[in-house]
Image (cartoon, rainbow, N blue to C red):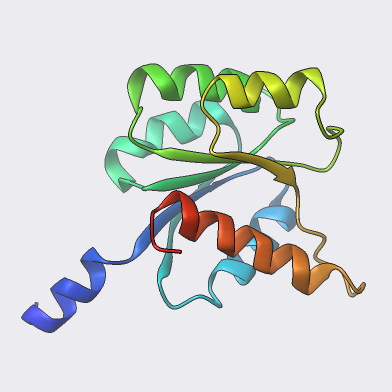
Length: 144
């Protein structure tokens, strides 16, 4: 690989998307692909699958749905802090209310931020939600 490509790849923010909804995974991936510094390295349908993929994919940031079968966002964070403390986690939720017990628990477990899952349909907030997600990913990686 040419040297100029190696440097470019090393500066990319590697993101793993974790969500049980295929529609949500694809929508989040489409949003993240609009930023030239973000590389979506993979997806997982739950926290257990994400934990299994982290060593291989080496993400620097994970977007993680709060509510998932098998292993939810809270359980995933508990394992992440023990096994992969260097990986930043952005928890996304369409159900959790601001300042709820689950949100506070995620923050206490080390989530970089807990935010509403971006709405990917054609309402007025879609662009703002997408920009907020990208901004939080960049901030968590230290590039904002």
